[in-house]
Image (cartoon, rainbow, N blue to C red; front, side, top):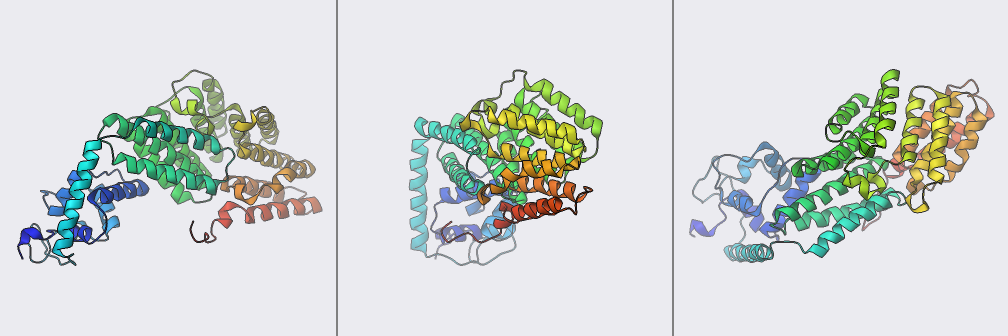
Length: 440
């Protein structure tokens, strides 16, 4: 049979044997690149050049890694020729072939689909408005939705944005879609970390940063760095957290976003035992938070904002790291007061319960176990779907403080540590290891 009627490369044969169009393969490639945190994108035109081996050099390393992960073969093999075709590269390889009729039929389908997409050339305005509205909803839903349910909604929105990116040829629309994707990936990072999946959280956060870089979006750059810094210090990597903080402050220096970065830096300094640096960072955070700054993410609100209650909660955690029980109790009490004066629809349960746990730890640092138990009791009834990894880590700090107290062996000391252990055992960090029911 004539060689020009056959797929010329191994990749072309794999694609011809599948039931997907070229556009669908490109969408899957770009999805996987985002999941892997690789700065690689693929267009339909470039993909079709890969299929026929029209390349003078191999693709960039980032694209190679994604291609090899997606199609399961080394790049030189994927782009190498099939047996029986004129050689385009060495070594020659063999791969299963679809029938000629099947392959020719699929090339027609691909041309038809691509032409239809090119003719459309864009995404309708109403769809873009709906995506932005969904990001707003999800950012605010973070305050009240159990993390596992929220993550499912986030992934649906992310996947829709991925699909739409392949359906527009308009740079402005593509920028909007990349912004939405970055925002959703950032929210997914914090949600995945709450479930106790640190590596997935890091992947999502890295993707958010990559999208921010692609569209040169300063607020998203700063916020995604704050997410990465938060994951780092909660993962006992305070020096890495400080690096992310410094990077984020290159893009925004005033307003709530800058205050959040400074407060995160204070926590990292506290973990390192750098008392002066931690206190100075808290001082700067308080100073810059009230200054005006153009920040469309903070304007969205919800998880993108850094309100006074969250600021006070963060300060209390810093003082706990520094061993200052009195200052920690004062800040945690302020966080609870600010939380209770926040409109009901804007309250985050994590602020209330985090502040109560920190207040209990502050009492334990001062050997006041009765006060610690009183502050802790309301948190023990929190349903398991909201027992996040960060709350579990807060209680780990409380248990440590109680065990180091001179009343550790008392009935109340044993009761507190027992309740803490039971709470942690029922947290998302542990329950997330169970298999999901079929269909999820």
